[in-house]
Image 1 (tube, rainbow over the protein chains, first blue to last red):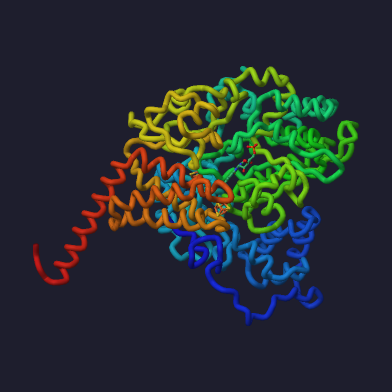
Image 2 (cartoon, each protein chain N blue to C red; image 1 turned 135 degrees about the vertical axis):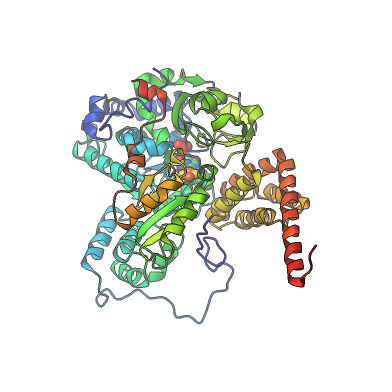
Length: 206
Length: 434
Ligand SMILES: Cc1cc2nc3c(=O)[nH]c(=O)nc-3n(C[C@H](O)[C@H](O)[C@H](O)COP(=O)(O)O)c2cc1C
Ligand code: SF4
Ligand code: FES
């Protein structure tokens, strides 16, 4: 199973076992007047704040906007968002590091999440992940990673390709799928979750 | 047919749009509910016997009755985080029939007088979230949401919030923190969300399937709904069946249907005539059951009597060719990755368990390690802030208890393999042939 390495401690708690650095300067809110923010990013942040006005509740949509703009939660983007929100960059980073879908390093913009949890691995998910990793190697445009249960165990083994669920994926379909991902085509259209009928026979009878 | 409520018309093209939903009788129960007195509506929900479908199985109406009355801002939060391994029922409901959920949610909101409401959907459900977003916009346009709906004087808002990949945000208080824009760490209870939830206001949290069942309850009446299923397990349940079965998928059945019927009758059992080794009845967080338990009724009480739980209503079937060590490995890896780290027994216990299973796989473990592993599980159970720790300890503890001989055999095999490999390396390095 591919590791989703977040921190040295391989958990969600960065630095919990290290003492605070008391010599460090306290974080400050970036100056909104001098921080340049791309117009689309500013618009997306303002939209998030309009929909989630209370406290910091806009943070997650704001981080999505940063990631959309830069391909990852880059320090530059975090500072810009912090300037618009009037919060410290650390407040945003602390939230971003908790969630698996926020990338804290620059990675490929095309995402391929391969579920390697129980139901999928019972149906060959580890081999699927290996095959997809083999296809893309160090391709800087594609971020292939093992993921926990994606809520699509009925199409195991499966992958989420830029948010579109595809499965069950046979190993001999991997080269075709990889080509489609590279060329930006619809991934295995006949195998997408969105088109799958309900399994319950009572539904089909009607 | 009475045991198709949630899935009625589910595969009808366009059911996700408000026109088709209304042509099929949608949004007819909402105005009926809005004419009821709030107390009567809650009595109706309680009387239906509907229990939470998200994991804990708490009676829905009773939870609604705990919400204090008064002028403070109250909230309904729908839990659409669905990340329990093996579970994918909410996904099908949201994708194909989002308005049923919205209608149920508005009725629940009216019952507790919550004017601001949220659906929290896991970030990975991107396509489903788009569908739901569009449905909410339609509902707003048609006056199902907004001010003074159906002339009832009730103002209601609904907003969709997307998570960003964290299992723990399915735990209700972790979800609330996440919705408030924080790291999704669970909160100490009490206070329970009913008293102090989102933004410190009284909050009713329910699963997608729970809320989606409400329109059927208004339609059938509390008694009509309670007549489906068995004692203390009223109504129909969506069961997600996956793993080693021939026809994985979601099935809607009356609670109390035999598990054998579900696994073999509906899902076709394991392929190639293989036998069932074990199965998780309610997602990966529940105690595993074996082939001997296949005749247990699929309902809250029967599964509890069998030592396990209905959980999220997700059956994962494991056939006889699979390794229990591999299962334990996947479980431990998942829970240690998802532990939020707030309490020690869970943060360290999941991590230690993972490393011990790794040792079994590497061939460096001894049978004594099994006792240590079992003891770690015992020390997690009941000692954590939320039940994520228990959610690993129960299935792993039960795997060790029920399949100890298989663990021991695998420890032995892997040890021997490793020793043989080391011996070979040694003799190669020394130039000795054995
Ligand atoms: C670790 C953990 C994860 C959970 N994940 C979910 C989930 O994904 N969806 C859900 O509805 N409930 C989940 N729950 C249960 C919720 O805490 C809560 O009981 C439920 O949403 C209440 O709704 P219900 O009464 O309608 O079931 C989870 C609980 C725990 C401890
Ligand atoms: S039991 Fe685990 S997940 Fe739950 S609060 Fe404690 S550390 Fe966090
Ligand atoms: S186990 Fe792979 S989607 Fe659930």
